[in-house]
Amino acid sequence: MENTKKIGIWMDHSTANFINLDKEKYNFSIQSNFTFNDKEAALRRSESLMHNKENQMHETYFKEIGHEILKYHHILIFGPTQAKTELLNFLNKDLHYKNIQIDVKSADKMTENEKRAFVWSHFEKDKKQQF
Image (cartoon, rainbow, N blue to C red; front, top):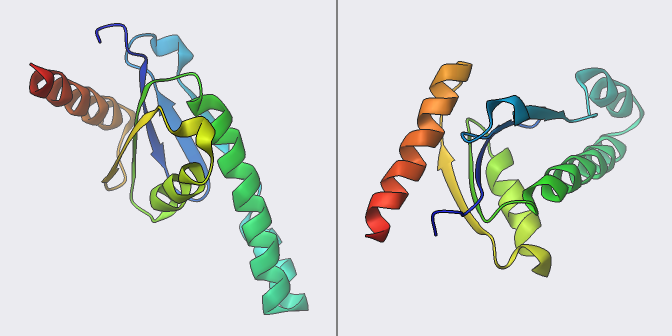
């Protein structure tokens, strides 16, 4: 399993940072398009409209992340909010992701170096448990 493609994703509801330990130049982020201003504008019209718009924007955000996840075999999703669990639930509804190992962990806000260390530690621990 040494050639397993792995990636860590630190995420909240606004940003998903992809952390690839093998190729640092391939680290990138995906931004949610649902901003505070969108929320305020929708909320002025009605709370129901705001929730519908928020759900649509989160689904679009999760689809973008999911598209990238298909390139990997083992994923670590971590971050401070429930966005990671919401993404996992979204992915579990789609059979395209059934053969991808997805781990979810809670984590606080982190610097870029802390994120890389967290991902490295997770996959090193996983590697040791396989033997």
